[in-house]
Image (cartoon, rainbow, N blue to C red; front, side, top):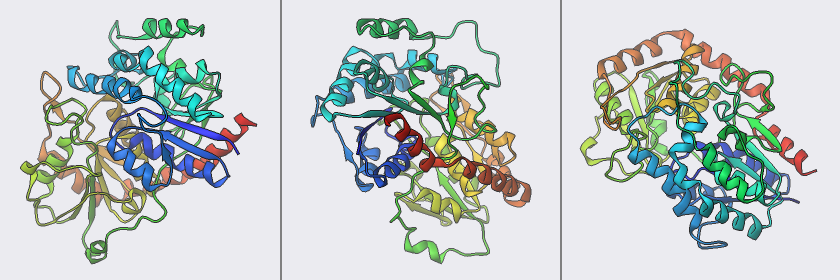
Length: 419
């Protein structure tokens, strides 16, 4: 039996967690021990419900992981004046304050305290550096745009001449521990084995990239069920599922990463449409300004994603990678309202495959105030629901995603590193 520590970017949403829990479950079924290190509220609930240990700050080590790593991410969201993050180098510059020696030291302590045989990382810079410092085998599970040979988040535009990067600063940290310098922040995500989510059609990389595709990795608690009221929904009227993502990342302060506009615009667009709308908000409080919801809407704190997608005729969401994959894996067409560049990238890949439509928000000068044309959103919902090719293309991609093995293949490849 081996001990695996799962390190994850500590944002308070479910995207990265839904990629990690299925692999953790597979490793556990194979007799291994798995622990997470995630301080955020929503993910903590899912980790506990899934039956895994979560090494919270203050248990095995100090509170450093929470206040070093999370603070960097939140500062990015609050202070940044643009929702355009071009690539992983740019992202590393944006969250630089969460990548410092203090955060790295905390993860070094966590790895050693847990006596991890390997680190399985999901976009945590400090975790990847700490694994190298402790000479612990590192398996990374990445989206294609994290790879240093990727065209980045915004592949449909020409990049500016100069893009901010934290590479010199990161090399200073690596140098303190006698580790080799990097040329690209994405180099940190190339592990002893690098696993890429998705398939080449949706997540393209050049043939020279040293990585292995594993298809869709999506989480659902095996014991999760749809609420009783779902059975009462009419069969002759479309079911539209809205998953807005994280409504607000930083309390009352608005940030460009917030997805509040997804729910707000969906309420405006669908209030009078002849559809049944189910809203899942992921253990969040809905703003009072959006209440009461229209009569055709049903609100639920949390819904099992794959089951809900499979019972829906259409998904509306914020463009998160996990949400896109959930819809595609279930063979459900989507209308996506992407709230920043990485999510727009995901949405454009879905659009390319003919499995959905996009409604792009317009942003204020600060990037933090967004607007969506509710008439455009309603029109695209009607278009997708009435055009069979969207459903057919979603089913086509679903079949391809299932060919790559998913969590079981990932667990097998991770075990090979230890052996």
